[in-house]
Image 1: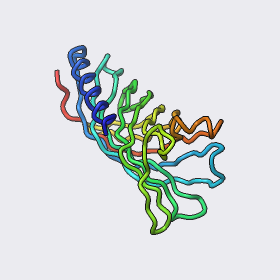
Image 2: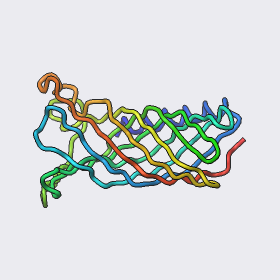
Image 3: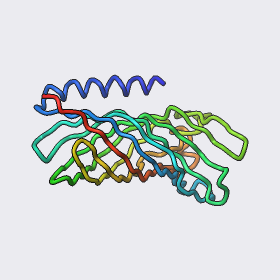
Image 4: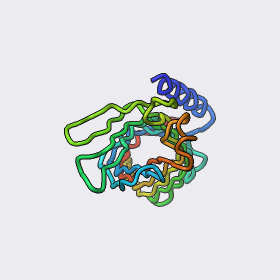
Length: 206
């Protein structure tokens, strides 16, 4: 949880600093459906499929011009995956995520791309009725790395104060704890998420 608190403090500091540098700031609330998947590269033979979950949180946008802006925020994202062979075998993961993306708006069209950083706050490994909490960290006794860093692309349409978007997020960091990566050699675990979300934008603040 210490990493989560640090992330929140850093995010608030960035937002306050940026608020002083831009003339127009928009605040909003965002929620939607995540179709999450975990890619196991040279780790397990089991194939995975998408797990339905959700995201919810706040967004903050800073205008460079009428069409170009910088977007960030603080959000909860559900991630994980199901086994392709057995629906009742799955991994569920919960992250506090901060995106940072360059956004373009024109005649209702919306597009955005940029990196994100996320810290895991919850996780379970589920096999039928058996559930086990996932331990996050970098040690040899941990199950999963707490940090997830990746890139996100988003496209959609704005009407009045509402924005409907579809997105794809690709994790770049390895979910295998750092102290175990030498043992697994070239193996890698990464998150991937296809999302559909609705954002409500409040009145901009001068």
